[in-house]
Amino acid sequence: MNKDFDFIIRVYGICIHKNRVLVADEYWFNTLMTKFPGGGLEYGEGTIDCLKRECMEELGQQAQVLSHFYTTDFFQSTRFLPGKKQLISIYYLISLENPEQLKTSERKYDFPVKKEGALSLRWIPLDELTEEELTLPIDRKVGGMLRKRWEENKKAGL
Image 1 (cartoon, rainbow, N blue to C red):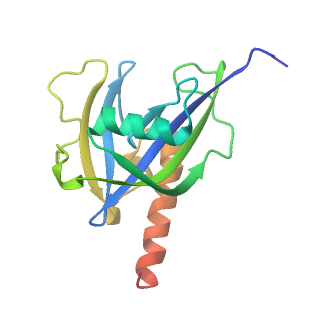
Image 2: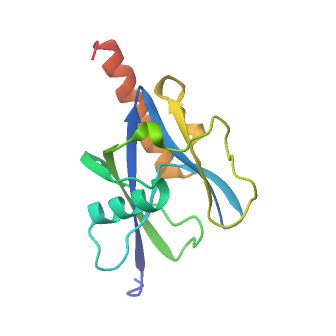
Image 3: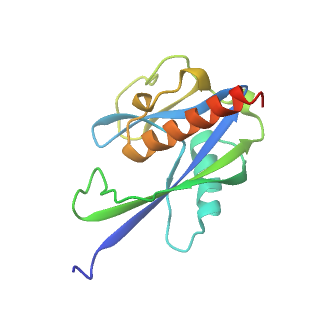
């Protein structure tokens, strides 16, 4: 067993507003990706502090964490360092102080140039959310869970 094995912990926010979920279209490592807003845990930071920092950086707004939604429960190697780091992702349901004031687009990858760190935000109606809409494997699982919960709540009249 490799005693130098490292984990990467990422923390994401699931913001639902007016029956839509917020996603971030980003460009990193020469790759276009659609994911939930959030990012990497820094040393000395708690998961909720990380998410609040990431929301300020990516969304320009304070986030309030409502509840835990999901933590990775299967092995996932990191996409960009395969075989070297194990990825643990933690998802929280969040609310934002002014979701209507977010600069969002109707278009996927709506940024002027594909440059490292490019970001645009979009709302996806929960009725249209599919796992395939999301790029990363754990996000896809969470997207499927979110859609299933949405369908169950609709059926129950909630």
